[in-house]
Amino acid sequence: MRTLTPSAERICLIAVEHFAEHGYDASSLNEIAGAAGMRKASLYAHFTSKDDLFAAVFERALAAEYQYVEQCFAQAGRACGVPGQLHSERLSERYECSSNLRFLLRTAFFPPAELRPAISRGFEAYLERMGELFRAALRAQSVDMDESRLTLFSDAYLGIIDSLHVELFYAGPESYARRLRALWYIFAQSLENPTL
Image 1 (spheres, rainbow, N blue to C red):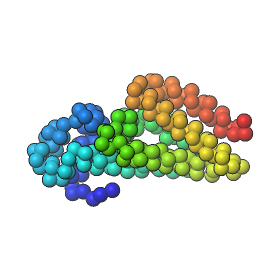
Image 2: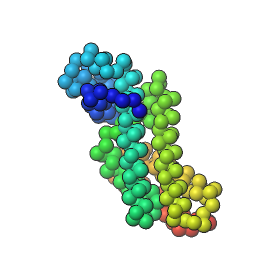
Image 3: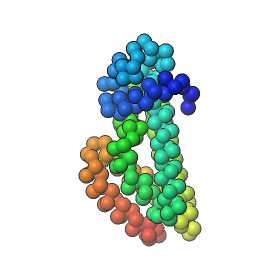
Image 4: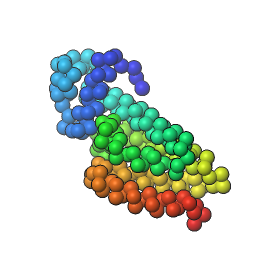
């Protein structure tokens, strides 16, 4: 992640909220600059283009969400709960309070065409890291599970997370809660009987 000046960091904090709310196409550099207390020309002293700003915001949002997911799995590991449950149960709350997560989901679902390859690589790496954390937590609790089963359950967990992301973005917290209960019920039963 590139190092930014304090002014550029402030612009990114404002821009992540703006991009999370409006998406790439409907976002205005004039509005972002105005919210940062500057003119658009001053914004260009920090970022060469809208794509440049968007890429910097994406890097920072990914870093923040990586850190959050790492913390969730670390907390769950200390509590010895079902791997991944803490993260999935907190996802709705995180979505409401984190412009970074709202931005990431909007961007993953509707990436700007010019930035699609970088967005896809970044978001897939984020999901892959979540899968690695899940496998490590499951491995720590299930000594008898072989690598193919660990991978199978990890892929199923990521399928649950993907489904919950869709519910949060398109349907809202009530639908998310219903989907979480149903999926987690079935998934937890499968984890209890991993040989089926």
